[in-house]
Image (tube, rainbow, N blue to C red; front, side, top):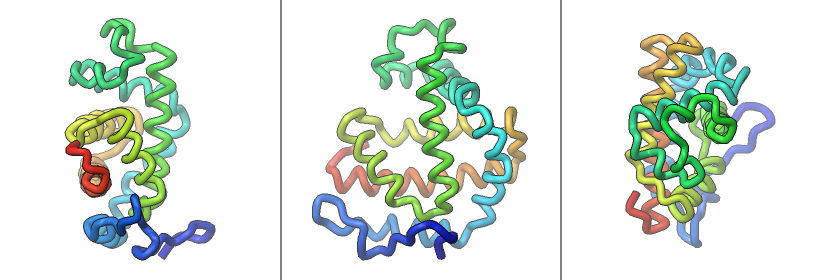
Length: 182
């Protein structure tokens, strides 16, 4: 059931290129709806993240690029920035803020994320060519940053990993519909 003011998106109205999306998306959304406690654990700490998207977003992308240097090359506008200049870079912080805002939308949708995820998966497949493994890498960085900056405890970290595993699985289903082997 959708919270008041949110539209419910039933399985019958999710189409992509004229095809009904695979059942796996519906299964994950149903599975996610059974685990509202996971969303609640993460969302109780989300206020600290959204109170300063730029700083937290900059921290997420800076760490992603430092811990997994190959990921920096996936962002052409950041490819020439030296490791030492990543922290505090306004463009990196702004894009990190965009990433965290989208994650916030996904979390607040509590599993009913098809309308949010479809356009994101489409651009990440067709325009940016981002492989699925990169979503797992950024998930781990976000878990660490939320633990340090927002007080996300071990149970919350596990909950975020479970939520993101379902989201990544749904991205994979969209990628397959788009014939992208992410």
